[in-house]
Image 1 (spheres, rainbow, N blue to C red):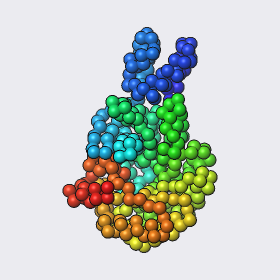
Image 2: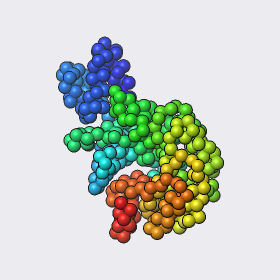
Image 3: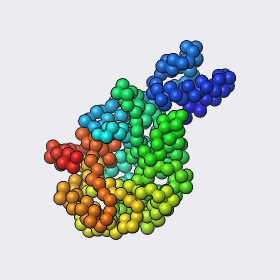
Image 4: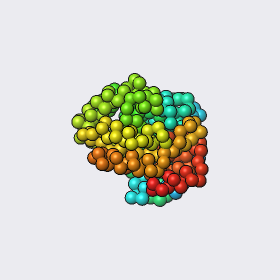
Length: 348
């Protein structure tokens, strides 16, 4: 990222320390224009403004709710990208970044997957999502503390650019976000789980599971036909054995589909003896699918069964629900009734 500016500095024989000053201005001081790099001579600032741009995207709008802000960005080619800032009570500031414009995986319950896949985002476009949020937080003297690759797209189908972005996120000269504060979520691209593990990035892994058996998972997630659970779990075991880090298994509870006692028991059996934590999410109805929310009693029973079987589990609060910022809603318009909003709030 900014390799073109680095090369320009070298071609003009501008001292190397100037590029370090530039990186500090962008990543630490969260500048939005070259004019703000006051340590540069004015002539150099004007020169950079003439030849370069600090951003390949621009902000279209930002929607705010009590605990989240959803940013709609537009690329220079005209594609829309969404990212979400989640403000936690413990002062963590988490950004859910997108890695693609829409998604080719086609999970049946996901609003993002209902749209046609457009393109992979570049490393720069991924990083710029974080920079936009840092600029938003600047007036509060806050910065992004955590990153989750859980926005639009399947990160492991844009593997190289995502890995480049992670390296910039971790780099102390850039954003300096600790590896354990970065989580990559995949729907189960098995070869890339092995490759990701072997890179030894020390970042966290999340698996979008959503079903405890091949039949149901293949119905919900067509990708499972290519990478069935037996192969997926072997790859997950490899990750935990090599890293000694637990995996977060994301499980969206869908009413009368995957939320019954038998499913909880199957899931407990699948994860028995594995280093894992299950995040239960409540399905959010939207116009692209006909699924419904689960009954609250079914959600609680599902959680209780997992706990009784010794599986670590949490019911994850749905953040940004009122601005369509919750999981699986990026790019989709939500069908929401008043009672459904109150239902989701009851898990807070």
